[in-house]
Image 1 (cartoon, one colour):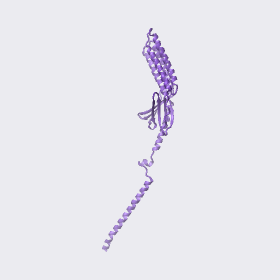
Image 2: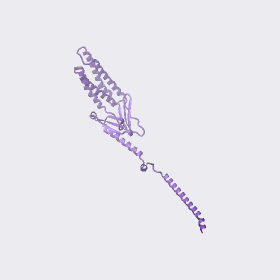
Image 3: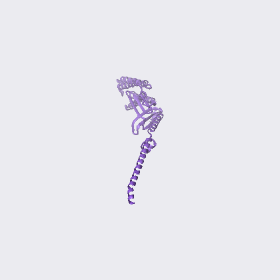
Image 4: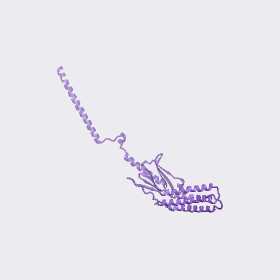
Length: 286
């Protein structure tokens, strides 16, 4: 089951829309034979249908299972799990209610120019739709940090999983809008490349600086382990080759000794041959 109370909050926002749409549709129908109005009964019907849609989606989200903890790989363990906050999304949807009410009042109960209720109603509808959608999305989103990956999972109609291996992460960015600052929220982005690349956006979480610090610590820990595993010896770094073994040195010494011995024997043989050639000449001279 999803986090929070999506069915309850969708009912809180959806039922008034259904009631208001039904009332406005009947109100316009009653006045259609008398004074002229700026709208038709179909407008109220559309509002009622929109409220029914909010109700249906809220109950659907309520029974959708939130993403579970991802399966761990070899030598991997979970460090931190975060969920997006829902308070700011609900506040945005609630802020749209006065605008929607003002738009409906100007449209049905006054004779103001049509653009005025259209602006009020359109702005309220935009804020309300974005707020309620963000609430549903945050309800079904989970962020996980392990010693190897940063994972984002979002389950709505289908499952969406996005992850960045820490060994490929090249940047950690913290952002906080003015609206998020009112609720103590912030965003953390982990990028796999300098120009963007694959990115995991951890959005609307409490204490984003702490989460970003944990990501940086895991990055530093992974870099130190990789450097320790790949660090060559001092002699190999200087020569660019592996250091000679003791067996190779002993073999080289035996080879040198054998060469010197063979050279000495050849020199002695040449000396004896020269002495033998000179002996007859000495006798003849005498």
